[in-house]
Amino acid sequence: MSDLNTVTEAELPGGQPNNLPRGPVKKDKPRSLAGDAWADLRKRKVFWTAVVLVIFVLTMALFPKLFTSADPGACSLSNQFKGPAGSALFGYDFQGCDIYAKIVNGAWNSIKIGVLSTLISGLIGLIFGLAAGYFGGATDAILSRIIDIMLGVPFLLAGIVLSRRLSSDPKSDGVLAVTLTLGLLTWTSGARVMRSAVISAKQQDYVAAARMLGAKPSRLMLRHILPNSIASYIVMLTLLLGINISSEATLSFLGVGLKNGAISWGIMISEGTQFARTQPWPLVWPAIFLAVTVLAFIMLGDAIRDAFDPKLR
Image (cartoon, rainbow, N blue to C red):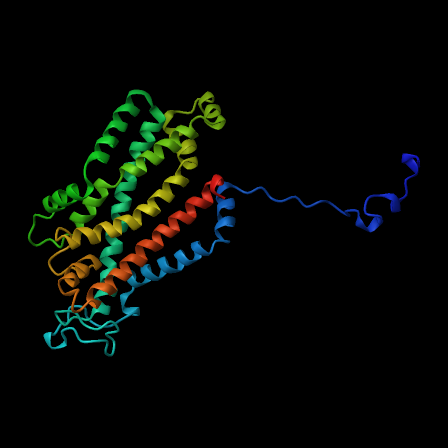
């Protein structure tokens, strides 16, 4: 057996000196949770499919003139139930209105109500969840019981009653009423998600260290706990956005949503059901756009949730 001091380079593992690493070894730069999530999202086809669909729908809602120059209100009974012709790619409905033009222009109300109602419910859920999770004790018990009571109220019944009450003005188009209705009824799930995230975050060492250094409760919540709890909450809001868009369509379908000439996919579906057996296309096309839009936001939320949750990777 050769002495350790006389071992030649050829006897080293690999057999050749050229196999030895030369120069400084590169170390991977540590990444944050968001960095890990983005690296995972970039590999997901579902994520990019959802992004493309969401961008398409948002572009259609914000810039309808890019898709059609036709006036959705220019209706003529002479065109009743006519097939596709010219710029009317999807034909005409029972009033002789361009179905494609109504779908494009109806996207604005559907997306606007979905976004604004999600922001309202997101703010309410954030306040309830942050307060319940951080203070605990009696505060948590009271706020949790309020959340449980809200969860026990039938959503559809409460939506009909509240929407009718808020849109009592005969001149109102119902946009504000539906937005407030959805915002006030859909915050509970987000509040429970935020509460759980805050309870987990406040037990971490960095929160204890900040408390020992004299940080006030407001600083602990806003500077330390909230930034480390918000990821799962944002994912929840992404899913809620798709749900609110479909809920607006449901209320409009039932006749308690938008009114007075307002255009939305829910109203188009409601009108199309009257002639669904003989002329299904005025019903089918807005239903397809609604389903694809809701699916896109739910797919986006699912992909982000999976990326931020290490257990699901």
